[in-house]
Length: 228
Image: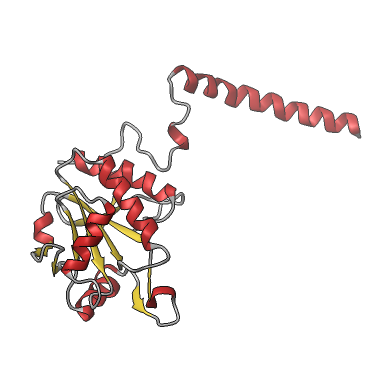
């Protein structure tokens, strides 16, 4: 019985070698070893729309930034930008989200068509003055990075109904609020865009906390910036 088992295993190894080893050697010769290992990276024949699905138009908004200026979605026409919901006194995930946004800002520092929209879910505390100090503390340099405040009900409708990115008050939560750590990616034409997961389904929004989400954004923002 053992001899039969060894023969069976040897046969499987032989078949594997015949089928797969030539393919591996070919990938090495073509410097293509990591291509299929990257997270949903397009092949040469794929377009940006093949890689990044159009989820739909991003909601319109009109709020006040850290300089006291009215900022709307129209300020971002022709730009690729990210949207997040946060609050300046958040003791949990916001510092990580802020840090990652700064990383993305610095990664695309020479791209005038890249922007960020950070909307507070605690407008009673996060006035324009508070948000200005917060931006300075973070080291915000991108002129297209606006920290926005305004009417609380308007902001919550924008988050929960407009973007479907959860935000809410909860006195039992640390900081008194709850919200997701997701980033929305929006193209130059105002469309929410996202890559697909391993099953071919749109992820819709990007993880703004984990390194994998930030790496994916670096790749996908670059694709959208190059899109006409």
